[in-house]
Amino acid sequence: PWIDPWTPIGTPISNLFIGWPESSIKALYRPLWVIHLTLAMGSLAVIPYTKLSHLLIGGFLNLLFSRLEAPNTFKPIPEIYKIVEEGGVLGVSKLSEASWRERLDYDSCVECARCHEVCPARISGKPLSPMELMTALRDAMHGGLWDEALTP
Image (cartoon, rainbow, N blue to C red):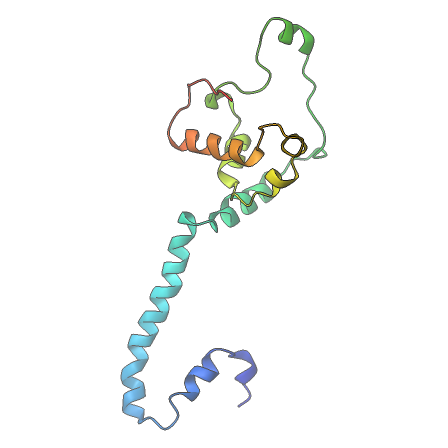
């Protein structure tokens, strides 16, 4: 029929029922529809508990709150040498000091390991792994360790 190209899955399945009595098909319609509805809604409900959550967390929110300046722009740190000489901390020393954007980035990591594979420090043999750092920060954040010192 004219609708076959628009139903690539339904048409082959419906061909299985050719020759069945109409009463049997009507009896199967409601249970099959309930199964279809359950699978569709179940798939939506599972998204937050799978790696598909990055579609919502990483994609949608990054689109809404994207940086207006160029991505390779760093904020200047005033008196950086003085901070280092006094033994101060550059960056974040506790999770409570992290911005909402940094915490969003911790949650958005899907452990694809692309950053890990191309990290110049890791390639040179240093023990740094950006992926492991992000997952450790995410685990600390989910564990509620907001005011504990972050140690390498």
